[in-house]
Image (cartoon, rainbow, N blue to C red):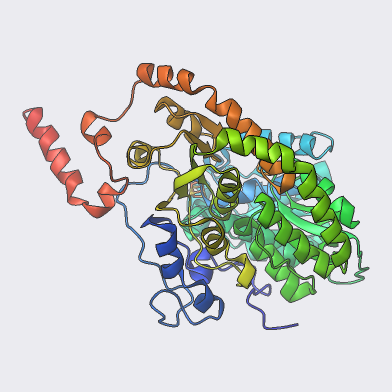
Length: 525
Ligand code: SF4
């Protein structure tokens, strides 16, 4: 095994800012961001844009004084470790950190149904830290909860997550997990995911995966399964089975909706792939470095070109190159007439994508293959490099090299107050948004919006067809959105709505004080 970049000896997972140089605010063109990211030099650990040798070297990130809303790593752990069907997650936190359980319960149930598994509720408890706990500590509360959870549910493993409050009072969850593990007789897994640990929620994916890799994935008695492939995923429909069946492969989805045993067998798989490098590269790299399961080094499976390359890379690893070529040929012929029809209908239409980072790169590939023009996009964060640093995993570069530049490429967390300026700057006929709360906001501005709930929808050859057909439906409600925009009241004033720079507050922070003073003057204060 080669040099290891992921340390599984520690219970804590190094956050994305330190590991990858992740940023959350930037504005320019996709080409400029590729140059500034310095993927190659970072992957060789020579540092980033400044070449200063630091792997955490930051891109020149915008610093906005305003953050309207966000998620945190704790929430992501909630919807990862809390979505394992026969394990329990204990959130050692005030109850407020579990506020989004209802929303994640819906995602979990939908995911189980999509994967043809029995539908059940989230597997989460909360220790409900109160004022006294903050003063005197809450270790006994956590011990009691671990014992109670074992008694009530007899789970295969118990995960324990930190939150800002538990980190502030210095709760030692590592020691408590170590102490209780022999007593309850199952893995008790600490997850260090307090919200202030990282400025981007995606660190939470890595933290949940870190816990699974350390204490769930089999290290002994490994019986290789040459037809098993790990797919690191969320809750999307099981399209990967039909895509990979012709190569004789069975899919092992990780982490959402999986059982303990399904996760444990990850070390027995022939390879690991994903629908999104943002989500999957930590797990895939650790499985490669620590368990000898190769990571598929390929572009993501979006569009004809991306799917071809992805399948070829898998075919090579499993020794089925000839079968793969024949399969690709058949698929090209099968979808060609429908693809042509969609291209004729969609040619020249303008689209805008607003999703997580690598996923956006995949979606834009699909749109450009449908001959839709994409002049602008927002990604919720940017990783200048992915774990493993594989050459073919540089998704932004693959996108620009294959389909051309995106002149208005913005990195920004889910900030509704920027939408107005973004859509003033770039004309679009529709927008695809992954975080559902933003889609109605765009719709109120008169733009037909697609809330992409099922993240596997655009994957593979059929994914292009599915996406094209759905976009035709979305475009047909243009009139509805125009009417909606005339009747929807904006919470922003005329001055803000007249702006064309989504990062005005970062570029001119003094403007906030000027506006406050102006308002005071108007009110005669
Ligand atoms: S962990 Fe921190 S940031 Fe996350 S929900 Fe709880 S208090 Fe908020």
